[in-house]
Image (tube, rainbow, N blue to C red):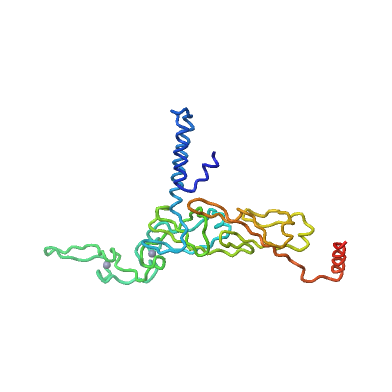
Length: 299
Ligand SMILES: [Zn+2]
Ligand SMILES: [Zn+2]
């Protein structure tokens, strides 16, 4: 049952399962009380996990509104195909600029004399014939002002602080798509729009729902070897060499990328295209042996 419990992809499915199961487990119906409480705890945790998940989406195109942060990030084919957990450096909040301490001006740059207090740092006011001095609010009593704009915050006095975060990628991200992360996810002041730049892979290619893999196989390997190593999303695997004898693509159903459809998930196929490699040059001796081999085949 635990397997089933971990596989919920949407709230509707989870809630339906809960309603069914909770009746069964209820102590009034002879259920074990400990099991019953454990189940309720599991349900609440799953509920919050799934609700949080809905704050992350795949967008085909986007029209950001309000406060948002846009980024382009590089993803690997493996990451998007398997929906792996990926680390990002994202600005989650705004803090006072540490360089200018919120003053908006460069504290190491040129200074100029305060035009309000003429460098004295205080202003003299007369109050009923009595002269009083107050601190100049313009230069905060320093008598001078910094002239250049702070290079780090560009005069805003605040900067966006980046933090390393981990995101479990939703299924179905493709080149040019947007990974949308709602501001509620991190409790940040803005939504995130992360455009997917897919890193080219030496032999994997995503095509529709499937993963295409080019397998370079030497012509003699198919004849001499029992098994051939192929690259899959889960790593290198040995498959019988005879499946490549016809030189045609071989389909491995359900071994392609994870896909999300109507809140359910399935996997596309892995299609291996064998690319048979022949030696560019072969010497006379090898040619002779090969001819012998061909003659032997005819016997
Ligand atoms: Zn600054
Ligand atoms: Zn002043």
